[in-house]
Image 1 (cartoon, protein in one colour):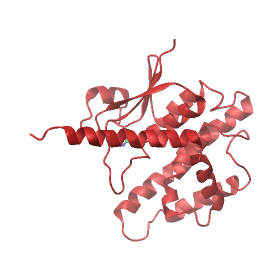
Image 2 (cartoon, protein in one colour; image 1 turned 45 degrees about the horizontal axis):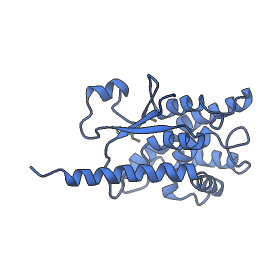
Image 3 (tube, rainbow, N blue to C red; image 1 turned 90 degrees about the horizontal axis):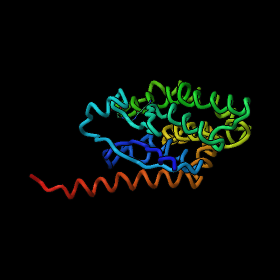
Image 4 (cartoon, rainbow, N blue to C red; image 1 turned 90 degrees about the vertical axis):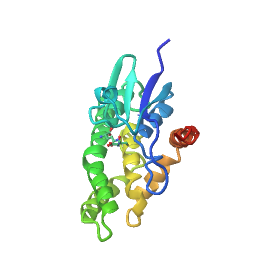
Length: 220
Ligand SMILES: N[C@@H](CCC(=O)N[C@@H](CS)C(=O)NCC(=O)O)C(=O)O
């Protein structure tokens, strides 16, 4: 019997306004496993005190990382590709379909997330106009043209590229996709999938349970 693989995430992240709950990147791996029917467990590293064992497996002290039968792999994109190697639900096996999936996975990370994350951080720290708004709008406009003509990004069907792109687009979704209706519909469509809903609900429940544990720790 193959061992279930392990998705590592934090034991807790802050709740409340601006909370990352529901957005912690282990959701990408949970979602992929749910889509592909891959058995997995979730285990945790401390959020507050990141020790040498954590850094040995994720050199930036971040999450997620994945453990699969002796292999440990960090970076959500790399871990997603590792999962895609296990199931053609996530990545077609024909050369063209695989190439399209791969290119859109890298595009999600290197052309879209490279804008959305700094845009989001700067937005948190400025009350005025976000200086990255123009850059963001340009990237979204180009992606809008692609998604206006197709349901999913690669190979004519849902793939791991859509898991990554839709999750990345959940950040700009907060500002609204007013002039980008195809992007709005795409994120809605992806996030309506039962596998995403399960992954998100499970992540929310995981961090909510951690709140309860913290509340139960006796005060010194
Ligand atoms: N490029 C990394 C980014 C990982 C990342 O930013 N993880 C967040 C949680 S979603 C984190 O660990 N943040 C805490 C920190 O950066 O110290 C990946 O995709 O895995």
